Length: 270
View 1: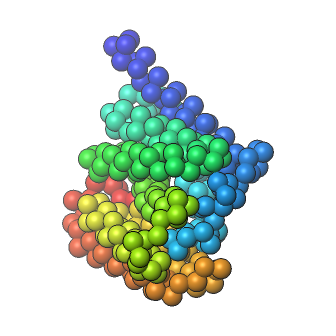
View 2 (view 1 turned 120 degrees about the vertical axis):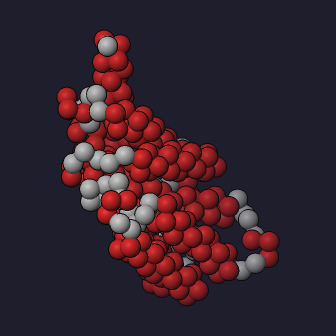
């Protein structure tokens, strides 16, 4: 019993420390703590006009919401009531791992190790998929848990799905990839189609969870804005992004309406 209590305290502490590490990384990545803003680091490879898959700058404002959710979860899960909670025992370490990987991704960009950012963000995506799966296996205990755990994980997963596509594309472009002779517009449409398909699959698997659909749609919508108003214009990419958003929203809403309330694991299924 004493060993179990010690393990629970360790888990809570690891999550809290990981959240602090991620917040420090976010300040460095924003340029507020002496680092180079992400859009300017690594030769501007991740700037809004670097590739046809890059979202416009305001899209990254969603990080504020995600970080607030992660901080809220780190504090909430440290409360005595969550110490022995079976759900937090399964969620704690995957969320902590995602926070550490997030900080590692920022550092890889800051140190101009653009190639390293790909395996890091792919691993981050895998960890978040696992965390999302875990939220679907049991019901949150109350509304607060629904928001800070299920909602945050869902937003995090949806945004990182978009970010992964943008990151991989940025690395390929920086490496001089010529697209096998295909036009950049066609490649953009194909990648956006895959992102839209991912959004639909997440909606189906999550039975209409709103959070991942919201952040995925947010990223794709700002991608469309960047292609219509930025320096790297692409009407085909903008149309594809808008169609992907429409597909994700329609499938998510339809599943949410048709899924029996008893089959939805969350009280307010975020």
